[in-house]
Length: 272
Image 1: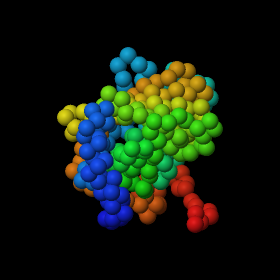
Image 2: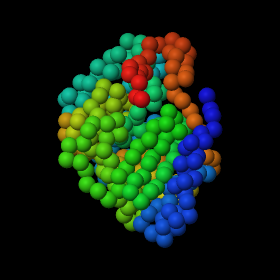
Image 3: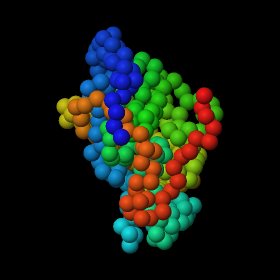
Image 4: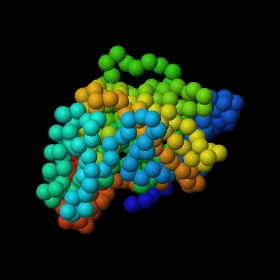
């Protein structure tokens, strides 16, 4: 169900007040990623793109008889623990279960997995001390704190603790403290991670400002034998943010494909 999101539009308009926009325009180190009138639509598909000369990200390992995607559990960069986790997921899918996709079941996509959400656009709010990365689907907001160090003991969160800075026209983001959970994965194929996951992203404009690219490095000794690198890409879409509530259609795919699904997140206590 689509609605006009007046609150988010108001936030975008507030953050685009002349003083802030002028400051960004005067600083060549700061790419202008935000607008109330445009967002960024994913253009990489379900897979991260490889980076020349670097260890590649994991890819799809095939499909089940029902057409569900399988993980590449034999990827040589996986540790024995990660490979075993992926084989277990594959066995569940081969036995007639749907493959797990965080956003399709209304879970946050995590870092860097959220970058692969391919349906709705992403929007940015750039402020002097923070950058907000906002996905249209289900109101997911990732906060990046600028020009500060990581906390000594960051509280584990779905998007972790992200700190960043601008450098040579790029937004550089360093993230740790990503929650360790069976539904927190790093890609579209259920590749797991541990509490030691460390992700660095470098976001920059491309194609004369009509595209956005992020180069990502992923380091997690518990899941990968060596750090791997990847890219993701978005194209500018000239429309403001709309509201799309994921859980309003929580049985749609299960009824359509006639396969059991993973559960959706449920709030067991009120947050107010």
